[in-house]
Length: 220
Image 1 (cartoon, rainbow, N blue to C red):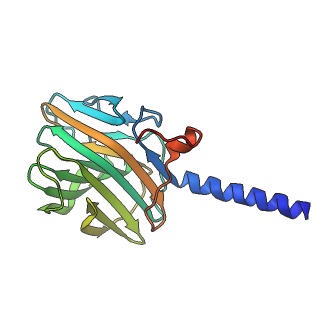
Image 2: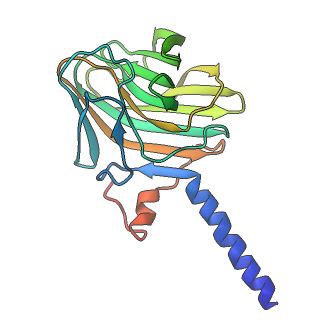
Image 3: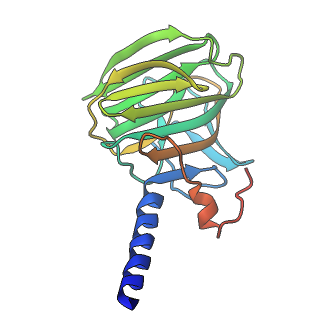
């Protein structure tokens, strides 16, 4: 009986460990997850439970982004989600994922000035619009907060803004990195309130930061 009880405890701990590794939530209360820039254009700082990305120059570097320091399983069903607010500039912002290097990645962008959105695949440096620029009224205009989501279920990847599905595509996956994408221009400022990832079809994520703090609330 003792051996059975020990085995049961070990199995439970292993299950919880796997679940924790499969879920991720960064409330941006400091750079505790090793965020780094894909270019030399970003000037980034963390304050007020947000990551702030500033760009002061225009550039032809169309792979500008901030990547999380950890890797993510992007072969299984998953969800990426981020709440963002552009404070200045007229560029696209959103989620970069399926990232292998600066020449191979995916990006889902919105533009709050005209309620635009698009999905791009970059292979060996060549960009292809999987979903060309379109508009949707679910996107909040005028430098307001928007929540952007990428959700893979089986062979289909779906794209959401503020809870509304705006498109879907079949995508082949090979990258393991993900993060925030921001277009380049003069006087651009983006506020990123959080970044979430979860495995499975439910799309629910565990607040990892709160666990790291001994279960105490993380201030959001």
